[in-house]
Structures are given as C-alpha cells and as structure tokens.
Image (cartoon, rainbow, N blue to C red; front, top):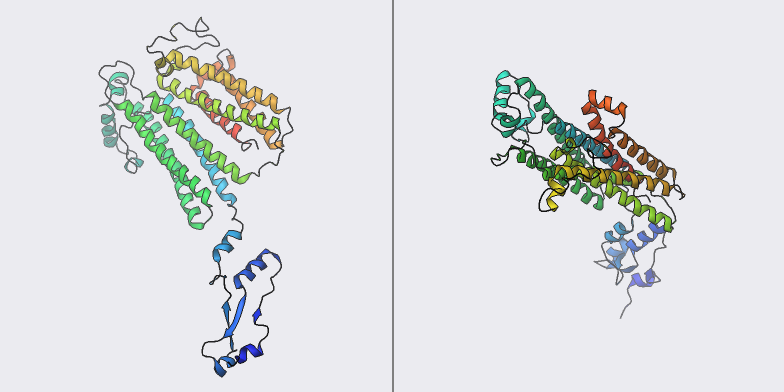
Length: 425
C-alpha cells in the first residue's frame, strides 16, 4: 500500500489552532476545532496544485460552527435607558388620568356621554344641531330624568366636555403605551423578560378602557325599583380605579428598575424587616385608595363631615344597619366612610412608623429621601382632609375641585413614594 504524498509531506497528521487570548479567542478556537488534513477531492497533482490538503472536522466536533454556543456565551444586551424613561412618562400619564377621573366624578360628568365609540367620538359636536342631538340622547337616561331634568344646554356642554377630556386622555395614555412599545420591539431593545412585561402593560391599558365603559354602562341602566340618585356601580368604580393604580405602580416600578442601579447592601435582619414593612405599607396605601372609590361611588363623604368624631359619636349608630352584615362594608355609606377613615389613620401611622424605623438603619441617600418624601406626602394628605383646619376649610369653600383633585393626586404620590426606592433594596 502506497502512502499518499500529502501525508508524507505534511507531518504531523493533526494540526491544532492556538487559542487566542480571552474568552472570545477560546470560542473562535472551538469554532475552528481540530482539523484533520486529508487529500482534497480529486487527488493527485491537481489537488496539490490547489494546496493539496482539505480540512475536515475531527470526530465529535460540530460543523458548521455552533452559533448557539456563541449566543449563550455573549452577555445579554442591556435595555436602553429610553425604555425606562418611557415607562416613567407612562406612569405619570396614568396618574394624570386618575386625577382627571376623580374630577369627572366630583362634577358628576361621567354619565354625560351615553355611548362609546373608539374613533367616532373623538370628534366633538360643533354645530348647534349636533349639540342638540347629543343633549337629546342624554335626556333619555335616568340621570337627566331624576337629577338633571332642569339642565340647560350650556350646563350640559360643561359636563360633556369633562367626560370627553377624560376619555380622550385615556386614548392618549393607550397610544403612549402601544406605539413606543411597538417601536422598541422592532428595534430589538426589549429583552425577553421585558417583552412579557411590556405586553402585560399594554394589555392592562386596553382592559382599563373597556372596564371604564363597563363602569359607565352601570349608571345608564334603568332601575325602576330604586329612587336613588343615578350613579355608577361602586364595585365597577373600585375595579376601574384599582386597575389604574396597578398600571401606574407596575409602570413606575419597571421604569425605576431599568434606570436606577440596585443597592449592594448586606442582607441584615433589620433590612429584611424594613422591606417587609415597606411592602405592607404599600399594600395599606393601595387599600386605602381603593376604599376611596367606594366613598366616591356611594357619595359617602357627604354623610358625616366632622372629624375625628362622626357626628356626635365615635362609632355611629347606623354602622351595621344593613343585613347581612357583610353588605355594610361595601354598600352602607356610613360604614364605607368609617372604614376609609380607619384605613387612612392606619396608613399615616404605618408611614410614620416606617420613617422612624428607617432612621435606625444605614441606608443609601436615595432611600432616605424616598422615606422622607413619603412622610411629607402623608402629612399633606392629613392636612388636606382635616376639617378643623380653618385655612383648608376656606380653600375648600372657594376651590373644592382643586382641593379634592389634590387629595387624589397625593394618593398617587404616596403610592409612588413607597415604590421609589425600587423595592428598598
């Protein structure tokens, strides 16, 4: 048997590539692998003329090169800061929608638009005939028949524009989520976990719009057995507000997580306790704000306007007037206001305790500023809702909408302040 000339001329039989320095060089060496020198197809002088040798992969090495290995070894691309800033802007827009929705409820404007069209209603009435047609539609529903039967067209325009501004702001919020999300997705700026988070936020904002119309629809229904003032269901109102607060909190949390670096703090027992207290305080603030939706839905704030007593009693006599007892928590205006007061006092107490406890632990400057801001907002919330304060009473007398909208805004600020340190880590 004659040994091929290529083997006699090329010794040794196996040739290895020297790995380049660093992990990238090692990956390139793995990509090339160990190459076996074999005669090229066609053999003879023709093969020698073209080099005479053809590389072949050694047994056990994949060919073509393993790109999956390169993808796994490469570090994940960081999400650009623009995504975090976008989510913070969206959370601010949601907070504005919450405040505007509170003003719409206080002006009793929520039932002025009796139909819902995603695109058609974006154009408001312009001519006198269009306004009269819109007013005639409103006159067919219970709120006009029972409460506003003497309303003029000018007064109707005011409440219509209030509800119109709230709905249009909701559309702006929806576009602020969906359009940038599609752009960032197409650019490849979203990691796989971030894609799931963005999809959830966009789905929640769409659900929020549908839930808003479902809430308004409850106030347009005829109730022949009820002589009460037409109003939306307090359950649907609470669900509408609760989903908005969840959207606001999730957007704020995610945006801060992308923009602020995590604290590298030792996992001490006191730090773990502080985190648990902070999470509990956030849940309590959320529950207090949610109970405010029941107060607004039942007009329970008008039942007693004295503080700290409710009338002449610390505990009113009609606290458990409904049967079964569980109905009082959600349907008795006296109980709803009582619960809201108790939750508000508990929230302020929890915020104060959290602030005092945080002073005993070495914390970063960012966290300390957030705790101090949380306490300041809680104190402002108490002052804005305290009837004994003559200054606030005069301010409320002349500017009730400003004060009540500030009360709603401070609830969002409290919830944002407790989330600002990014999980207190």
